[in-house]
Length: 469
Image 1: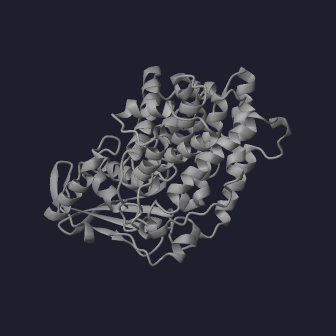
Image 2 (image 1 turned 90 degrees about the horizontal axis):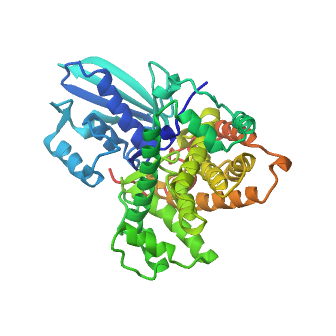
Image 3 (image 1 turned 60 degrees about the vertical axis):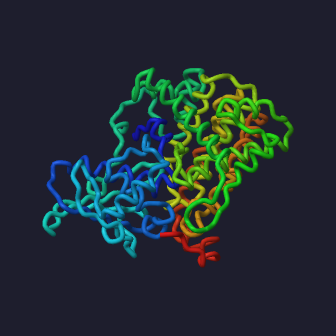
């Protein structure tokens, strides 16, 4: 049974896409680790399927260059990425493992006009010496920043080897443990996490995720301009934030937090703040900013928006409650990854916004005092009303309709939590395992043009708009 840490579901990284940016970035770093002893004078990168069709808009070419250059997406100075790219382009040189080799992005990164049998998101790295191929490795970027080595065919996460005290494959497993132990979902998840990490690491990681989410929202709420890519999408979160705060000039993050806490708690204002939070994160994501996969980059705004709804507008219970939220939400994400998919290239946007909304709904339900049954009921409700959602990004960019979809997913999550905490799960007809199975079947039945190819839906009807190369 697959074992996944919630800190694999929540990864701090760089936008705009976990499957098209973060996954290939990490795959490039893995490739160098495998073949660091080789003496080579050239590297070639081939992109297939969705990575080729929407790779430019999703910055896949940027990601593989940064990965091969050794930059860590968790720590890279995102404000200098364009500078690093310009150095590579202008010098036609890439520094790999401390060695300078000739590299021309326009010819050494090939957007192949075909799919690959391995996966809809496939990248192949090859090394050469004196014109002769040395070694190649094919990777599948399977969503949420996870990847698989094609030649090995196993998920590259150390956590698979961990034997957990409470192995979880289905929601029924999870619910059974909570009933046996008379505890919350987060308690079971925490006990499992202790087999992945020590207590200090768990606390630090949970706090780092919250901090990254809050800072991502704050940056989005205080940054204006036009998003890159050629669609001329104007950032809106800063204007919304200004309107909601009475044009307050923020002296910094603490002042921003204090201002929101003091704002009007009316339904309309709260609703607008939630949308503002979600837009802020995904505008940062679209601009290659730092976000947290939740469970993906394209859906990175839903959970921060719902978490900040709890933080600002509910009876906030402190960091322990935030950890409960993250543990419960993260485990729901694990259930979808195991039982279906969290990749839009495999399952459409239901696999990203739908999963993130289900995660947020479960997390919010628990911290609002809901039972484990109610938390799983909330996750089911949220996903039930995202079933069939297609992925049709205009111009291959994670902007339209992706940014607004995060706001919609956040509102649905809160509604689902409210319905669940007001309802009786014993009377529910549809359960979470059923909706996960249904989501997976829907994903398999969905026409591939609606799976992050920009060949269907809005992307088709607005195909005259092309991303910048």
